[in-house]
Each structure stands twice: as C-alpha cells, then as structure tokens.
View 1 (cartoon, rainbow, N blue to C red):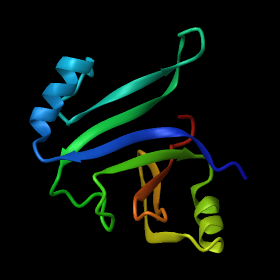
View 2 (view 1 turned 90 degrees about the horizontal axis):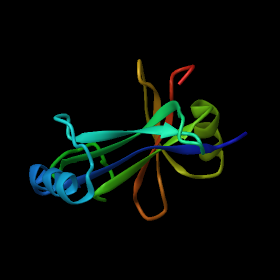
View 3 (view 1 turned 180 degrees about the horizontal axis):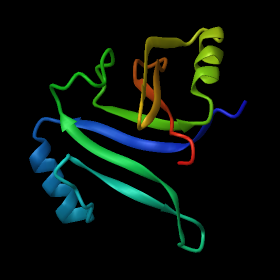
View 4 (view 1 turned 30 degrees about the vertical axis):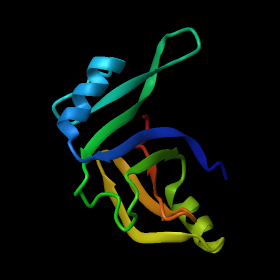
Length: 128
C-alpha cells in the first residue's frame, strides 16, 4: 500500500495571526485570504495546472486544532487509502487518534509522531 502521496497543507499557530499574515504577504508575497491562509495550486513540470492544491494556514495560538499536541504546527499529508493506512499504523504500534472525519472535503485521520506532533492524514474526495 502506498502511504503518503504528497503534502495537502501546512498549518501553524501564532500569537498574533493578523500581524503574521501581513508579514508573509508583504515579505514573501503569499496571498493570505480572509480565512487566514492561502491555497497553492499545483502545476506539472512544464507549469501547466493540474488538479490539487496545498493549503497554508496561520491560526490563533489558543486554538485546539493541534490538540493533543502542544506543537505550534501540523502538516497535512495526502493519502490514497486513509482507512487502510490508519489500520496499518495501529498494527505497527503508532498512536492513532480515535477520531476520524468524513466530509465534502474528504476523509481525515490523525496520528501522533514520537515527538508528540499531531500529523493529519487526508484522503481527498474522488477525482481530486
């Protein structure tokens, strides 16, 4: 079974998200939207658009999205078979969180790495 197929998103928290949004926009040219992040569209080697985006988001430091981790970041990895991968990780002794989400955006599951960082696994909806 293929495991991770790419990075779906990078999320981190900040004490002052608005100021950090402005810094990234001004100095790195990231088009931070009102929702607090940006979506980087994918392209092939020739620069032609292909289906897929990588989300980038700054949230408030007091948010609970990374819990039970106390880390200030979380990486979202794309996968092809979330349920199969979560089963494999459990059988390998990994700390897989019990919660799993299934929405119009796809299926999401989480595992904690050995350093206590929450890792998000995302199976996009069919065709994306």
